[in-house]
Length: 455
Image (tube, rainbow, N blue to C red; front, side):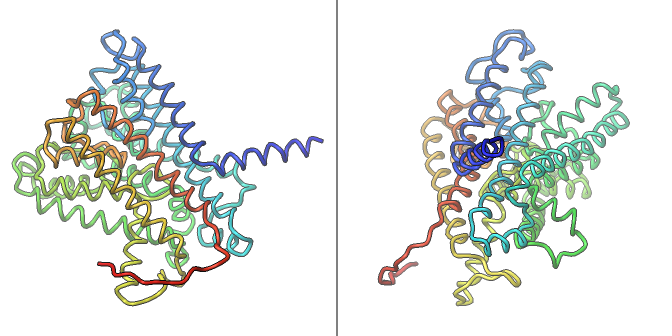
């Protein structure tokens, strides 16, 4: 009898995870409501007066969705209790994202046929459905260990380099370690991290944390096990590493060129600090959300480059937002195969299925459509220019957190729109990607083919 009950509960759990939209939307929605209630209490503000409901909702959504956009200054508006609540929401949101993304990866492989499932598990290095408990434990331990290491480095630097007492240094290190690894972008200074623009101990540690959290657990775990043998990496890891490295290099070069002589950003820095600031600026659109120079004073060309990098985002199965670097990699491989006249898309000694190519196209087009419609609506609601509004919309959709400064001055309707964008941008791609994979089915007949003219 107990065995039958156990199988019934297991079946119910599996059925729940086969409805990813319900799991993700309900889970994130409940956490956001709890965070809103806590932040709306008088204990959460420095003034002791209750925060407005919209302000609390905006901040809770930004924290749970690990975005980093703020309607009020984090340090001056929120009390220590409020800051701890924000950090807790970031932690819950980040762990939830990584866990759910990894579980959906396992689920997708579990829905395949036996031969395809075995091939998928070998290629992606994912465990079976029977290892869910161990998998969740591994994700949590990996995240916590990364945050402990980051917090230790930051705490030491705040004590040795800035004379902070141990308690304050530990608090700053702990908060920013959680914020950085989970790609949240919340900082406890009004200028974010601009005061540390020339400090490699702070900026490089934060950048490394953002990259690690943004690559995703499957990729990081595979790198941990096989970092010396790239030839054995799965296609997922190869695409993620190659595209991420390429975007970081291109982004660094772009920011060096466009901001080198800008007196309001890189201009006053020496050459080494300009390189450090450019690299940091290239990392943060991965979904980090921190900034060491004033984003509002950047050139429009830098804003456009940041828009593109934010829209792409980071790796799958991690805390980064955007359409993901794997989606961009798949689209690039599709274009390359088409240019060469090849009927199949191959990566090394593997072939990418056509269903995966369609998923990449669908996610990208839906993201573009959502950004376009939201930009139009926000332009109607606010007096700001197109480039400023587009930047803010993409930042919200990609759960990035970088801002030109207009979020704090947006109307209540604008704040509500950004809240919806952050929520959709966080749960949408995760839900859509798994849902598209789970809905795959084989038609038992074929219709006559007819070609049309495109392009």
